[in-house]
Length: 447
Ligand code: ATP
Ligand code: MG
Image (tube, rainbow, N blue to C red; front, side):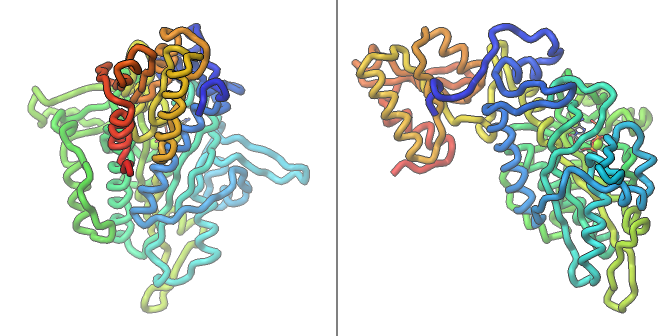
């Protein structure tokens, strides 16, 4: 992509309405524009990162054996009356009446809709286990939308629902989600710690929230410092293997880690003092097992092997897809701007031409752009007629992890400069080697 043809409305001024760094940087980098309180347009750069995050979520859910689908944003109030939540949900629910006077709502979550789909089509234990999920916009009329996409009113969520014959099977589904979430967040360059949480209006006994530690987080958290040493990494996992998934759950949840809702001073005191930490965290996901709460209320049963109708055991599992952009930026930025982890970056690398209009520099940039593109990478080439300082500032602000700088002086010696956004370190390399290095970082083979 050539920057001269792209739409990147960066702001020079720091927007005064933004209180936290991720919100400021998303506005300054031209990623989002507020449409009304807690509702945003996703401008091209922000949309790209949003799509990348969605893609990782999809890949990891599918890897875990969960099935993608799509449910609508608007739902009928009648289903919510069946579960009893139409009244319980209160003012966070945006209620809409259609032209026929029917009560509708903009879904804040989808337990009722998915349970209705399930009961309409599934009747036998032989069809289980089943986990369906979608990535869809939600609306919650938050009393205080703030911090940009962190606490929006309209926000994108991945929500998945498992249906199982027994509690044991449903807990395996719960564990599968925990494992898949660990992988998901790590691929985004994040450490998200599963913490014991409170189930709130969704109801249920077993629930963990995933928290990214950040000073600006809205949750107060208490944990054993040892937990921050845990990494899932790229170990192999068989998602059908109950014992393997259970072992991961135990490894990642056996140390003390709780939000203020479930915090227990007496339990916390058992952690050696030097390892006790109190901090703030951003909730980027939550998993629940809630048994037969919805299947009882809505009559979602299956015939077991003896032909008896039994209610299915369910759970629901959410990832805050749009909130993740804010969380990643909170965890990864410096004074000059965003530093995208390679896994979610909107462009793989930037190309800065120090002397636009210089025939040799222009040709070298075009060649780099073409070679990187041919390798399946997406470079962003700043081909504007601007001073080098301005170009560097834009690249730093939008946070591409790698930058190739091209100028007449370097080209005389046959080199360009490859710079890491994270470390600021540069090295001079012949263009082919710079390409090979960037390709290797993103796991692309150079022919
Ligand atoms: P919170 O406690 O932050 O209000 P929640 O616990 O009510 O969130 P869940 O129902 O668990 O939210 O939703 C799943 C995920 O969706 C959350 O972990 C969070 O990452 C994200 N999410 C929830 N509410 C919002 C919001 N208003 N804006 C952006 N993301 C949100
Ligand atoms: Mg939650």
